[in-house]
Length: 180
Image (cartoon, rainbow, N blue to C red; front, top):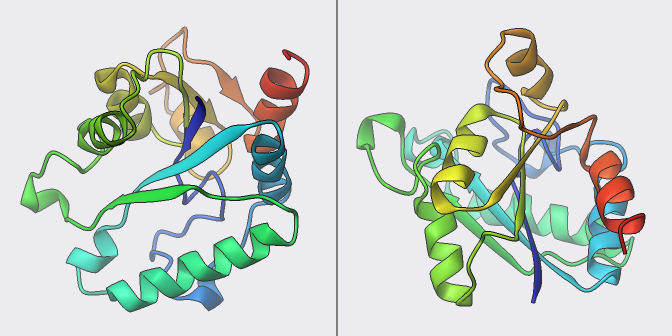
């Protein structure tokens, strides 16, 4: 099974320090939906693993989150792409759960449910919390400069050896299209 795991905010859509709380606040990063479509058309299952602590903070509801994801999926469908599953953590940092990145719980859950080791699975994020969670779960981390990525790089938080791409589209164009 060809599988790729993506963070949502900052990788697929624009991020916000105030959280994405409604469909109206959700805006795709240019090229991200086309990149996901390319993944879908090349036989990849696309999974999202995302922290959504706005639920735990009572900034938005599960219905709001579902409406955001419906908008994302409907916009993606215009390009012929598919998101096969969305795994999310609704907890706040105070909850100290295992599913909130940088802990590996979301990725471990994906691995167990799909019965697949993540050692050959690219996992794309825009923060070191994504990278740490992916590494702990045995996946192949990739950082993008979109979202918080460039800021993390500028702060010197990204260790050597972590592949960095401008955005999801540049990763897909280099790693998926040209490495067939």
